[in-house]
Amino acid sequence: MTPAQIIRRKRDGEELTPADIRELFRGYTAGMVAEYQMSAFLMAVFFNGLSATELTELVNVMIGSGAVADLHSIPALKVDKHSSGGVGDKTSIIIAPLVAALGVPVPMMSGRGLGHTGGTLDKLEAIPGFRTDLTLQQYRAQIEKIGCSLIGQTQEVAPLDRRLYALRDVTATVESIPLIASSIMSKKLAEGIDALVLDVKTGNGAFLPDRERATHLARTMLDIGAGHGKKVVALITAMDRPLGFAVGNALEIEECVLTLHGEGPADLRELCLVLAAEMLVIGGAYDSLDEARMHAAAALDDGRAADKMREVIQAQGGNPSVLEDPAILPQAEVTCVIEADRDGYIGDMDVRAIGEAAVKLGAGRRTLGDEIDPSVGFHITIKPGDKVTKGQPMATIHARTPSNASKAAAALRAAMPVADEPGVCLPLIIERLTP
Image 1 (cartoon, rainbow, N blue to C red):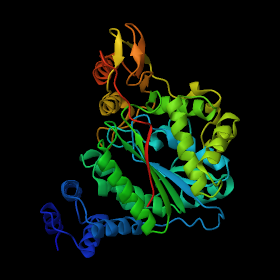
Image 2: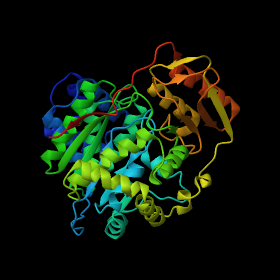
Image 3: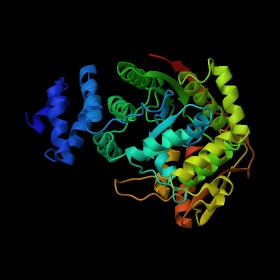
Image 4: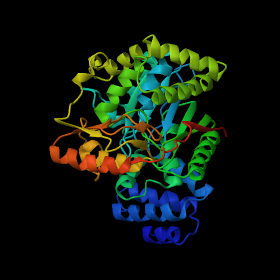
């Protein structure tokens, strides 16, 4: 069957056979299926979805496109965490060293910015010298030595996912549940983990704003993980406001440093503790979530988490001085403070618009080859429902030029209006799901 015939069948809502899936992606890997044809296929999937059989085969093809990490030489249960993406979501950079500091190995392979959301790799690379491009052998050796690795997909692991991930970002096919689930789970299943904690966002800043669809994504990933013999748990969490205060790569690293030293915004610390507790329990370090949370909070406050992050930064070529002096991070040339234009309350935020404004500022990519400017972004100190007075600072913009700052200011004002009635936030932790 030709690529066009396979695309047509999916476009028309027919179910593809496992052989069809294998044939299409074998051709894509070999260069016989063009990027524009794969773009058409992704759009067909976006509108028509994938059956359970199609999704199973797609995950298997993506895993089979590369190597699977062998971490059996590490005796403890290896646990990772993945977020479905959000604005200001920098939890991975805090949680990985925190959990590793408490004895549970964390092999973490992350991604780059996608759509209106930032990427863990882009944030980590704001640290001077930090390398995310370790080989699979270096990745395994680092986990054996210090219990944690924060890298991107290696050339060996799920190379098909890496290509599709970049293509989805520029073809408006990010928000497809089967494409999200297959991308996340193929990468996670190939990285050598025993267990996985999923943080699935809902709210207007999430890829899937509707809670029902977010739950569908979570259950889809839970089923994939359980079907491959992994321990999996998922939390549905809020993304109707940015997480923490910082939006932008270097700014978010600075906020991670604060949190690793027992400070940082309350909502960011809380979510990190909840997710870390899940990882510590599923990894067998503690029997209860309450006990695990207590130990995780202590590790943030007494410096053990920061010490483990120092080991990670040193091992991956970065400058560990960032943990004492975040001023060594890239700094924007222009700052601009946005003040409330009247008394009132912060209404509902358009968090997607905030993320898109950060991308336009240079914190993310609008096209496949765009370079990230690690210095730019926002520091937003208000949340929906907060009472404000005229002239009160609400956000600081970090930009390269006054013109860029002015455009971003207009976008932010529209995205976080001062209203007569307070906006209402979703609970930070909405639901916990198991297979």
